[in-house]
Length: 501
Ligand SMILES: [Zn+2]
Image 1 (cartoon, rainbow, N blue to C red):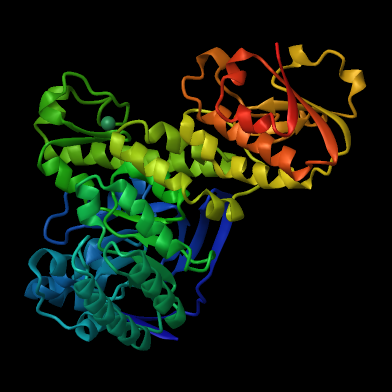
Image 2 (image 1 turned 90 degrees about the horizontal axis):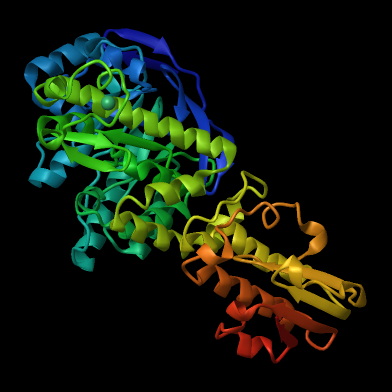
């Protein structure tokens, strides 16, 4: 098919395909092809303001960018920029050969509640200036509006998505899902978009949640959309540009992000780190070794918006690299736990994620990095849930010993089956001592485990095994006083003889 980019016309013959390379939780590394080459994911697109290029698009690759995003509406509204974009094409105008995604003005719509362009016009414009990935003019509905408004807005968004799909056939197109904070509306929005068939699926209308640190609500929204999108389609979380969120959002299956934050934050003196944001005026030291922070003094960084923007870009991409590496090695959960300890709102989000462990478990690879127990959230990881289901495979008879430590295993020859009990997994046959995940789980020492969640989950799994084999095997459960005090022991005594030593 023929595509025009400014004056130039070129052939595009690609079929959209998202190749997934590594997976961890719902996260993945992968790549897809655009009219300007491959894009590796997960990735973050720096937002280019065509009126004010703090960092030149041509330099973005240096930081690790795979593609950039710019706002077609801002270009369209400015006569000079519009003429230039139409004449030279968006890539020449920005001075980059990287893939360029264009946004439609939906963000301006959320800020000023009106834009002077129709969905059709702005889509045609994106097509004419040679955008690699176009976006329709959806209606970004803020969180917690009335249900009626959210439903009405979604209906309008769906009309525009339908129009967009009919119009744009020669390049990649993003289908944005709205629905405010109503999970059922997000779900039906996602199903509608999937029925139309987009290359990339967007989650929109979440910026107010990000600004007010409502990350647990964000988790619900992402999951409502994610569970209705085919697993082989990339997801773009619109407006999420702060690196402290990347691990969590990638773990939930988001692949593409955009950051205006690097420049906007710099303008207001905010220094981004992977754990949060600092006021550059309050910094006495630069806690970073990026090329900016290792070359310039704290005073120089403080007094230069450009240097601060550059630092913000370096740390943003550095975090994305860390996230990608953790997907490859299967340690994304551990990275999430570390990042989510940085702020109570992030911790709330991680706890919310554990509610979705059953769903995540279905996609999570079976073998990976050693299991590190880092907080009570670890007790609800998908691996633990999966292990708990597997316990039903044990069909036991004869005499069975369950013991919370090796030390308590004397007289073992009298038993037909020997199980160790280890938090948070619970019982496992001694023969599986080396196998993943239970054998390879690393925990703080028993004395140092502050919370009881791991033991509670372990005992729940002991009970599961006991009930499943009740009447078929005869059980002895050996533990020390610490375990014996647990409220669940009363129930365990109904199925096993408990020996406290
Ligand atoms: Zn730095």
